[in-house]
Length: 213
Image 1 (cartoon, helix red, strand yellow):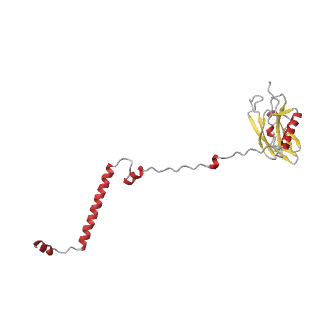
Image 2: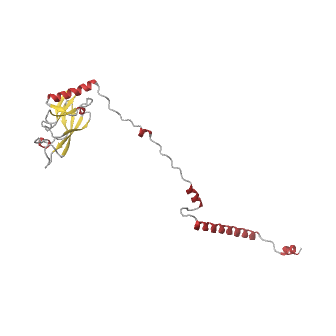
């Protein structure tokens, strides 16, 4: 009875006092949690930034597999269309024409029977150091030579339908006969029924030097 009388004598608590106590309790709880995280940060293993980071690093990320390219692995190389009988006959006729000139050809494949301007490189029969000459043809037969005099080195560099590029060996000072160190490309074009050199053909003494053997 005395305790109850004492409580009645105490003044009533105001709402502000209640809210103040609650806020102080929340702040104390937050401070406690902060201390706990600080302690964990001091003792956590190296290599982990936080609790969440440690869990994340423990789970490996699956690497997506690269898809194989079907087009890259199964690319088909297009083979040239075989020559017809008439095209083979035209090539054989061109080879025979060179033989009639006393030359032989080492690459009959240079002759393209499907082009308007065609070419074969000839060399004297039985004379390996006699030099080379380019023989030009059309569908109607032999047309012309690249030059009056032969060349120590002469190859077909590029072929088009009506234009052919030849690569000449050009002698420089100190070069041995039969072994020119320089090169020059010359384009030849079919203009109507005539052959036109679009570039200057090197001089005869720049293109050919016979070896002593």
